[in-house]
Image 1 (spheres, rainbow, N blue to C red):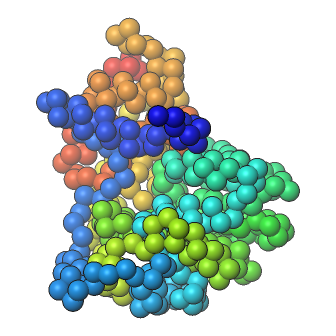
Image 2: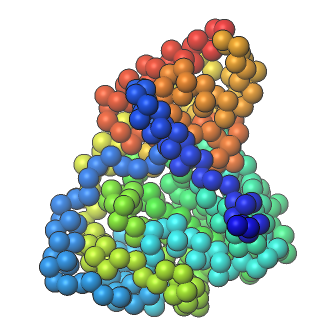
Length: 398
């Protein structure tokens, strides 16, 4: 069977690949601690599950409108007004099978072959692949730990060309946990507004997992609402990864285009998930404080532990549930006949030496770093940090 060049050129998600490798080692009897996958360890809130059960009993088992039930889209619009002070009509909301689909819908509807998409690095693993699937050209703009992993307006301006169509980023960021403040977004928005063909895709999936107040959206900057696509969903903040529901809020023309695109791919997401999502959207975010608070304690535990390890440069993430230390001080070091040339080598060393799985920074466009998820219990994280400290120290002193 002859496969297409498109699929042969598509790289596998390295977060999923590392999680798969960890599972295989666990199944072989090795005690692996997995810090590689970005999935909350909490269960879905009971009030959401009850809404899903009622939907089953009420026979919500038929096809739904492609962009989602009207009352769900209204609940999302109400949430955006309540939490973000942004006004959207339901014809500007498209519900998809996860935020991942919402992002690629927007890319496919905005990008022609050869068009450029500006992606600040570190970036979420699938951004580059999505752009390439659409025939676009990823323009990666790096920002290291010394910049708290955030690009400057000057870097953005320099990256823009006549072929630029999208600025695509996440805040809070996966993998760094960094958040663009309102003061940082305004000058970035000013750059965007000077280029009429440039649209921003703002991935806000970690909006509810923050440690220093609410996350501002670039859509709230004057003049930017009509130039911005907001992406959000239920997976992270509501611990609903398997339910598969994301959404976009966008200008009407783009929302209609994404409705059309989705109609040819998947149609709507699960009817039961949609009914449950109404309960989630209507909930007071304070009902989820127990999760956010637990993540904050875990962040503090992990960052303090990583700072005890020699050679690591560690920022303090303001959101999401990842640590993203710069590990480049270990490059060139050797132990037990193994030389660490890059982050991938180091991640494999930690898996074999410490039995802790992490993800190479290469997957996120940041080759000097590795990513660790702290979406697990404090006891597991404490054990993982002990193992990592021993493995890193062994390599440092070799």
